Image (cartoon, rainbow, N blue to C red; front, side, top):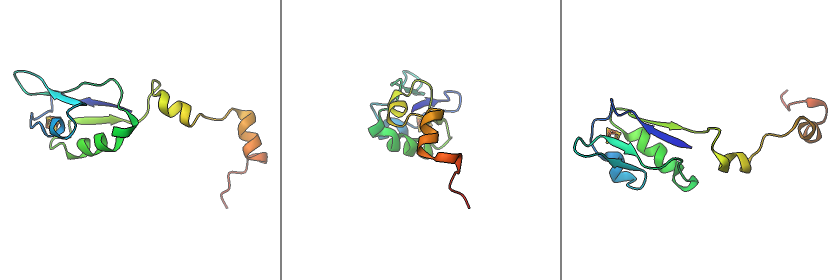
Length: 96
Ligand code: SF4
């Protein structure tokens, strides 16, 4: 997961910084929020989603997955066609 702040939208309330000071900070001297991590650790995903939902001007955007999200890729890799056939012979998807 990654998170970005639209600095043109940010209202400088500091709410996100108070919620997650290790993830967000306010720049000097204008108080616009910045993200201070490249990727969000798994343990903070829920808190970042909450901070984004509570931003009064919706300036925080959460990017749930990206090519660099190795945690997710290693935890649930997409099966190869051979693995998919092994898991679900005949390709029926289980819907009725
Ligand atoms: S909560 Fe939103 S408006 Fe407030 S500082 Fe953070 S990004 Fe800016």
